[in-house]
Image 1 (cartoon, rainbow, N blue to C red):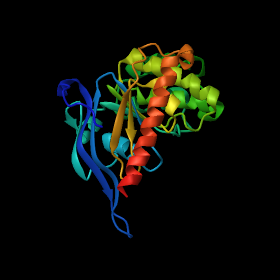
Image 2: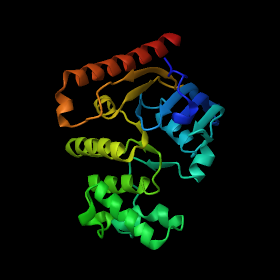
Image 3: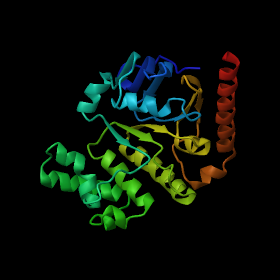
Length: 271
């Protein structure tokens, strides 16, 4: 199943049409993605989920212009991915926070602004705003080794938002955290996404996480990765802890799990 193609291009954060990726190896070509059709609307939260090796992270890297598609067309807000990267239309956060240990929280958050020569006063104001947004105002002068793993990830999210991107790309940013911290940051991320209005493309292996966070959950098949289903969550804009006990939430978790199992069965039957 693929997404509909009726959304006006002007309201699309991401549009992938027939996107494929082949990696050449000594043993022969490896097809990571094939025929990917995907639309992410402005302000929408979409999670990519599927088995290990299905190409979720590869697709995110193509969107981020960290790699180039072999086939198909990929646009970010109507622009080629490379132009969108140059224009800072997106921010990106990975599983490891990737903070510079010799820089304070403030200096890490402000790094993208510093690289783009934003004036100091403007930079400091934006850093203060972001530190408050992620709840780290009291820790702004600390160094990464003085922070918990969850705090480090909040710094990474703030850094990704520094240039006010319209799109946030996240590759399993909470995967290495304990369950309590992970659930707390899931709630924080939904709040941040709502307050900033940014679209989010989020890679995860966790079905409950995908459902809790997302407007839509995109299910991918085993390699070669392709989109086999899209589950609309329909859970509304309020994503607090009470949602985790909501029967509608459990129904969507079950729907995504069944879609994943269906993708595996379908791929096995093709072999």
